[in-house]
View 1 (cartoon, rainbow, N blue to C red):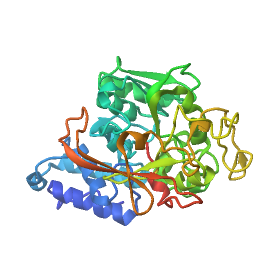
View 2: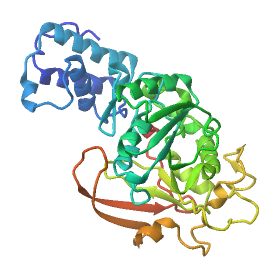
View 3: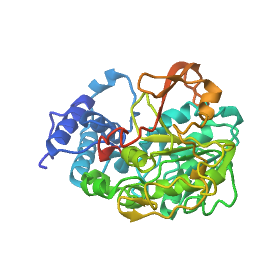
View 4: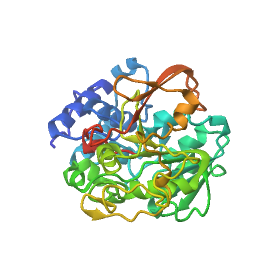
Length: 398
């Protein structure tokens, strides 16, 4: 790019517009905290100028010095030439209204789970009574830290198999001074946690399929592969979590797991299992709450497991599923009583057969948000591949 001298770029607005134009011209891909060229340019311009992301719009007309212009333009050029997402250039990403340190050792936080963390996962949980939370595949630690703030009485275990990821998570734990409340654990899923049990197990694990991985834009290839890909169908890690989670949940506990674009594959692999799929007011999909009933009889006596398809095969490869765990999942249309969600809140049934919960004036716990009306739509997994089709691999989250 031959953009060394541009004296006509005099204001913040000029630089944002110029950056957005260059991004469009270069054909960049967005999806790491922003979804368009203008927002991406604004992130980089404000960072270069040491300004907050939110400032009075009148400041857009403020003039910049020649040095500020040069530094800002250099950062914009770096974004184009390296194809690195903006958070890897600024070393900052926002999640649940909080700024986190990030670098290329971890995925850029972008999971829709923030919205439900802020809600305290009501109606399943009462935020003030939650004592123990587990964040599996913690990465930067953003989910664990957001949970520690949302559930003020809870101790949070943040587990990851990657030492590099845990080093980044440590930076963020120290940033928010939560070392007494968030414990970092190097662990392959549940392996290093002993017999600990939790009221909430939450996970944004790797779930990108091999096919999706091959088509990811260059921006996503700067992220650690370990945090993205999970076998041919994208379900290798998710299945292990589902199979083992029951032994680590309290009787009234819940598992929340994000599978993103693998939602349809998961519903097809386990057609007898009733997953509740969360809806989001701020956008997002592919987050499941498997319906565990700790007091129900086994679906198949002695089997202890509802296996995917025949012989535990998904997309042509064997998956190692431990007995116990998934056997406690209730069959949605097997004449078994509906799970605890119905018992607690009495869902209405929508015209499409989905369960609908109306919660009025819900308090967003701990994060200082105002009271607001939340309409939570909980969808049972649709059988025979009727799950929502994958929108694009770019929406892989954290």
